[in-house]
Length: 189
Image 1: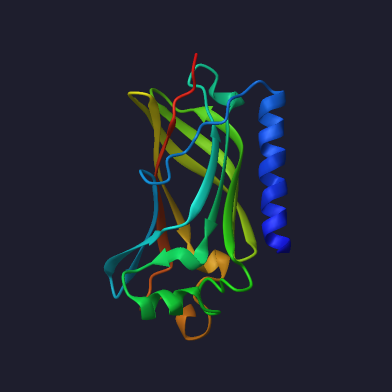
Image 2: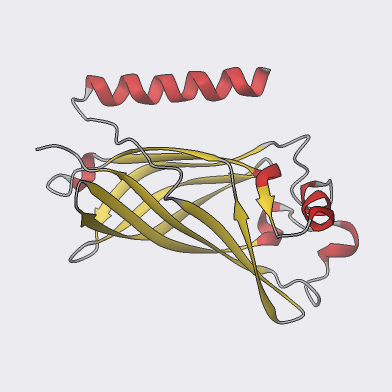
């Protein structure tokens, strides 16, 4: 209950801050959006999809530096396509979803990187460990929506994902790529 209340208060604060700054928060279409983590097990790529997440995005391509983004991912929703694997990954050695139910990303700056590309700086927190990251994002306009695509390489060991017997990176590689495709209502001019 405490974590849920905290997430609600953080979202309310972000919405109030954006409203005060005159920014409209885009409505994210969760059904058309996805967040996937790709790792390698015995050198074979393995995709797992997070089926539950929330995203708040405020972005105007005419004023990109005034934008912001916040993601909250339910780590227990990580789906590898097998119930037994899903339960193992939600367990203590991997995401420890009972202790750390959410992973978050909160942006602190957005900088143009040429054309429709942007570098989004922010704090990524997984399993109670935080790291400042820069996420390359491509933004495209598709009808009445904005689409945000990107990929962020991380080291799972930085966030203590894979402990005990899984700390050894010879079976499951340390490198993980978090790929996202977020579809949101375009900002009205």
